[in-house]
Length: 212
Image (cartoon, rainbow, N blue to C red; front, side, top):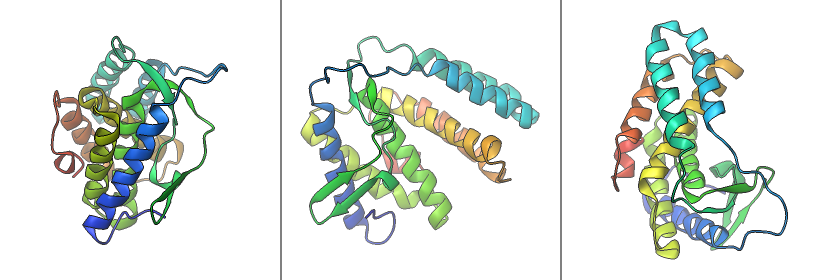
C-alpha cells in the first residue's frame, strides 16, 4: 500500500506514480451524467465558526482564516472544472509494483484540478503526524506527487493548490477537535500556522518546508 515512512526515494516514487494516475483522471472527458460542483465557502465558514465556539482564544484568527478561505475558494475564475476524485488521500490509494489502484469515488465531482492535489498533500501530512509523529515524513511523498503530476499534466496549479491545502487543514482541525472531540488541542495553533504558510504561497515552493 502506501509508503508514508521508510526510504525517501521509495516514497517519492510512490508519489510520482500517484501523481501520474491523478493527471490521467483529470484528463478524462467529463462524464455524460450530472455530478455536483462543491461550493466550499459555506463549509469553511462553518468550520471556523464551530472552532471559534470551542476555542474562543483563537476566535479572531479563525474568523479571519475562514473569511479569507471562503472568498478565495469560491473565486474559481480561470480554473477549468475537471473530473476530480474528491477524497484523494493515501488510505484510498494502493500501489503494487507499478500499478495504482484508487478506491472510494463516492465524492467524485466537478472541481478544479488543484482541489485533489492540495487535499492529498495536507491529508498525507496529517496522517504522517498522527501515525509517525512528524508531518515531515510525508515530504518525499508530496514532492513525488507534484513531480509525477506535473510531468503528465504539464502544469501544477500552485497558487490554487496552496489554498486547497489550507482549506484541508481547517477541515481536519474541525474533524479532530469538534467532530471527534479527541482533545488533541496541541495541533490547533500549529495547524493554523501551517494554513498561514500555505496561503502566503503565490508561486511554486518547497513543499517539504510547508508541511513541517
